[in-house]
Every structure is written in C-alpha cells, then in structure tokens.
Length: 70
Image 1 (cartoon, rainbow, N blue to C red):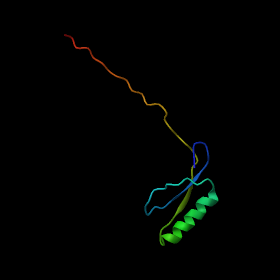
Image 2 (image 1 turned 45 degrees about the vertical axis):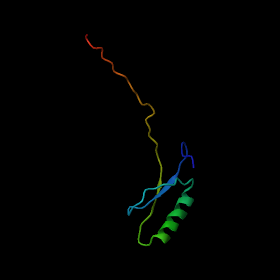
Image 3 (image 1 turned 90 degrees about the vertical axis):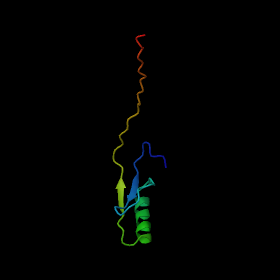
Image 4 (image 1 turned 120 degrees about the vertical axis):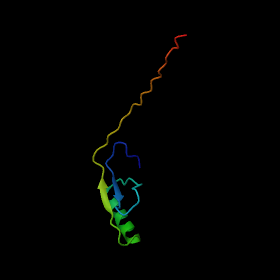
C-alpha cells in the first residue's frame, strides 16, 4: 500500500516485532491484530493509526575547498 497521502493503520506488539504492514482500513488492521493474537497466545497487539507525517526533503552537501598558500 502506498501511504504517501492516505490515512493508515498498523499493528504493534510491545512484546516484540516491528510493524511492517500499513493497512488501508481500520477494520483490516483489527482483523490482522486478531489473527496475530490467535497465533501468538499471551501477547498483546495494538492497532495504531497514523495521524501525522513529518519529513525533511533536502539534503545539503557543500564542498569546502581550501587553496594551499604555496
């Protein structure tokens, strides 16, 4: 899923593993959280919604030259 300008949800567990899938709907994320909870008894799974995006677009590179005095 391309998440550039879309709201999305992710499933996260504090017991390990980073979220890797951006779900396009809340219901899909809830379904995935349930599937993961069934597969990993005793672990907790949270459905998280992205609410803001912050990015820096520019990388500035400046070559510094120094002429030798001789």
